[in-house]
Length: 489
Image 1 (cartoon, helix red, strand yellow):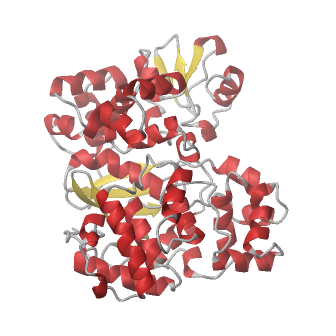
Image 2 (tube, helix red, strand yellow):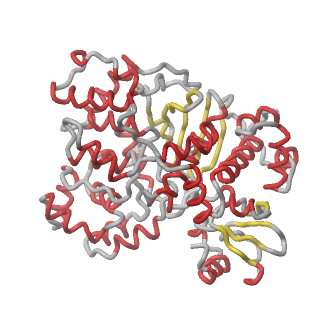
Image 3 (cartoon, rainbow, N blue to C red):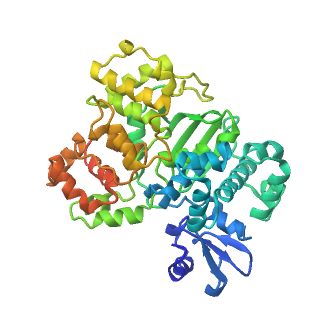
């Protein structure tokens, strides 16, 4: 979008928050860059230039605006809508792969050469993977500076910087303030916060309808791993350097996030996964506009615009839970999952109590005796085959996944039909066009709305909803009275 100068300038003049994260405005006369909704008086059009990423602005020598804080914009919805090389690379960079494995590791996961990955990112984003990762480190540093009392040396290494000097230089270059000045300007920390907890605000593009989003996560939550407490969804997180506990609560203009991490190096990864879990980088205006073109879907959208797809923080975990949920009720699936958690999950300490374990890893489940699983033999075979493929790396489910090829590999496993493969594609891999024509809730909703209820006919009818059929599923599910559609009391 950043190449459409006239459209970008209109968005800046109208301070349209819908475009935050789509592009960034660099002001030639001041040397700063802003989000489109920056509250200051818009600069003259001839003094504005537009970039596709904060990293590109920083690489061009611009510093972040102190008023609108463009580094806290929602992420571009492009990276969750597409499955091409650039989108998959951006999802991996957000997941911290460059900091952990370097650019060669990023390229290896994508199946391309380092040179090809760098060339593609430069062409589309105006910055290479190192610059993009550096921008993410700067944002992490700012969060830690403003929300914790940690010494700056600890923050530097937690944010991924190789030295305190690099940390200081980057903070000054990006924010035009020293770390000490950033901390002095930050709001006072809220009293009563749990020791070691980080209190954050996760932005999103309005509207966001939280009922089915949090209702689904709460109703399907696995005891010991997930819970709903005091208006917040809480769960444990398995992270690259340790573990964490997060509490997420819906607010009118943001998601309140409270994180407790065993290793602060995992902060950017934890934030990225929480944003993916709640689908916070979606573009609800574009999604709902497309669905409203269908006369059957339009009333559903108008009634509760901004529905999101409840996703996951761990793709392998969700794949296991999808198998456990085959042809059983939500309560039965939770019971099966809770047994696995107690027997094979890693115990963790929750400062607030209530959560006890991480969900078992694929490696832990690969050693389970199939006869110890209280489920039909065919489903035991499905589960053990899945976890063995996940454990040995022959099946990779992660941010780098190519959606069509991942679906094909899933369908090749015994016991995997279209429903299981598609629900994993929709909720774990993030395919916005995944569709569940055989799902019982979808078929009941289709019947009640006068839509075709047979899978083939419904799939043909749903062509009008592309490329947002996963969101159409949320609106169809919401017509029922299942607990997944309502915020818990």
